[in-house]
Image 1 (cartoon, helix red, strand yellow):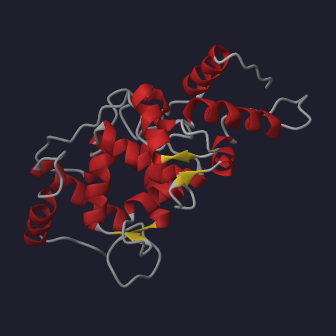
Image 2: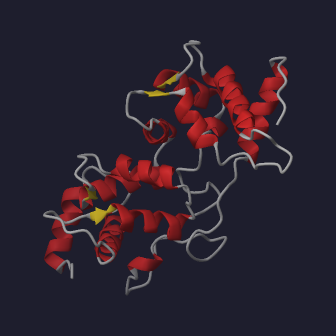
Length: 247
């Protein structure tokens, strides 16, 4: 069982608050308490204290309604900066700092890191295909549903590949997001829903499990935005460019 004494909690709060510009001291303390709560769900044996992949994925699913295994794995990797297979308390606070309250520049870097599946500094056509696979529903009459996804990849590249090299560099992605913020999550939800407001409990007895709440659903965040707006935007851009695609 993992616990943090009051002295230990204060020490962790002091050490992490210096690098957490988006959280105040009280919020950091609450997030550390939540960290130790999630440690109880960690099943893998480890030499260091941290949240393992399964516990972290469960947190993303139950709290933020994420369901895409590939995206959840990449979010875990984005938090796990030292690539040791766990998210330690420092990575937890710094990761949530951007995940919950990062500015556009910080969120752009984070999302690109999530979407760059193989970590080579580019989002390739193949990576786009895998991530967009869940964006289109297969029609009963479709002989090859993958064709629609390939068409969507073509549309995306026409809109976002500014240097026309057949893949997205960070510069391509950043420019596209600056031009249209909707493209920040063009390849799948990897941030909390923009409509959700997170409330730090102000009660005297803090409940770590109630730390992240949505004022719209009053519980774990089960409402996720869909890709409809993004797809509509890309399709409209395609029409503007004088192209046509059949889905």
